[in-house]
Length: 129
Image (cartoon, rainbow, N blue to C red; front, side, top):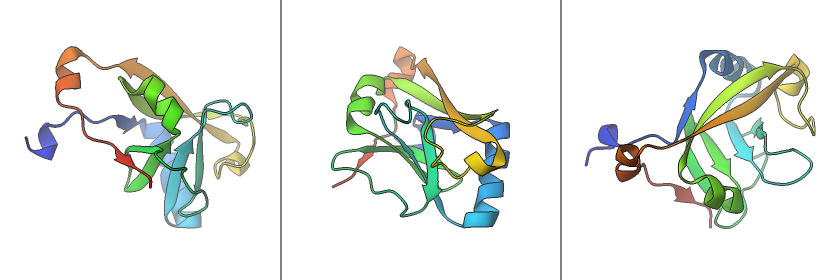
């Protein structure tokens, strides 16, 4: 099966993409990480590439404009049957470490379950070692 026939695990809203472009101009290469801990809620955090190191067996579920989107290994097990859509809201998210915070923005993910047809064609995930 060709990769274009695969079901993507990740998408981005136009509003979030505008913020990503703004962050690219200021910081260069980026990466996203969504943890499952208490402090950051389970909101995705945006860092300069290499600004955060995924743990062993964390999952990279896709890219946003070429920037890797990683999620915590335990969170992936919980959400592996769901599509992630990166969105952005006005305001400050918990933690404040994410690059969009000084812009008065916070990234958020919306989830939806895959259909049975989509599940048959899911893109594979990359695991950190």
